[in-house]
Length: 398
Image (tube, rainbow, N blue to C red; front, side, top):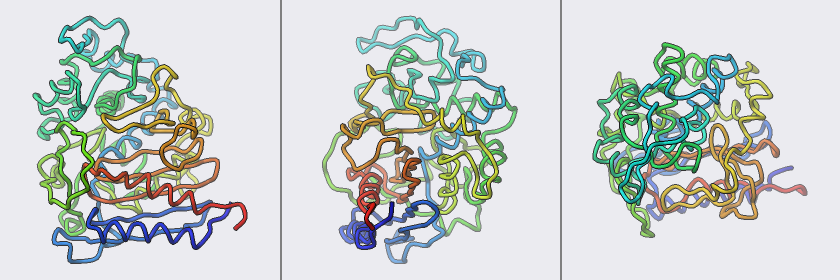
């Protein structure tokens, strides 16, 4: 498998066209086939005034690309027999011992099944997210400012979620949610360490991800990108087909860069393209770039397998469908390209963030890529479009 140079050029051309059309403030990417980087670059602007070129070391709010990192740490603890997929979450957060389900009619009924660690990893917990439309539980989350109140600790958030009803029976349906935040607090309970301490010790230090954290140091603030978009994180998503508008947002209000206490499992990290790209190696084969084993081969093979039964497919996040994809123990995984809406390959997987960050890993083709921008609520799926252009460059006849 090789990449055709003329087709690789389409990646940069497409990215530049989006900047020229003022649909995104900046776009950076890196694509690798085997051990070789076949395309990388950055276009657009570093500053809020759209006057200075994007820096190679720009710092991004990666939102939900925080989740796979937390999930990998959970799998490390499972390998150490300090945690198990079948354990009840109530063992660590007693409030989840007597769950109720809030039906669409407004009636609450008692849950019949325990909430398990596996449910948190696969987003089948019955938890929801503030932004989900047509969800009575999401409405309760918005009233309680679950996403918007950054003064809550991770522990306080998890216990607040436990006090509210679930949206469905644990294990009965896939719904994107605060599951990874609750999982992150479980990891704190298991180890007695803060989430940041765990991520730093188990991933950031071994992978040399020295510029990934829940804060941005004062001397790095000039490298932090402004956030553009049209919808705050905790607001209900509204279906729209309008093109992106470069409206500056107040990102600090819900995603502070200078807080010493704000930590979340589902979002909250800051990172650079180079830093997060190092994490893709762990997703690929469980090792660091230097060869240190962070996950065993059997665990890597197991974590990649789809865990969503056919009866709970296709997946969707609000108004955004994900046909062809299942979900494994860290993110999405393509299980049937016959239903895919974007160019992919069976077994491709990864995840994305609300501000148009995205990554994919394809173990069969030894192919990976990362895309970074800072636009929230985009109606153009930047990551999947860039992924498609990367795949179309591959050929057996190059």
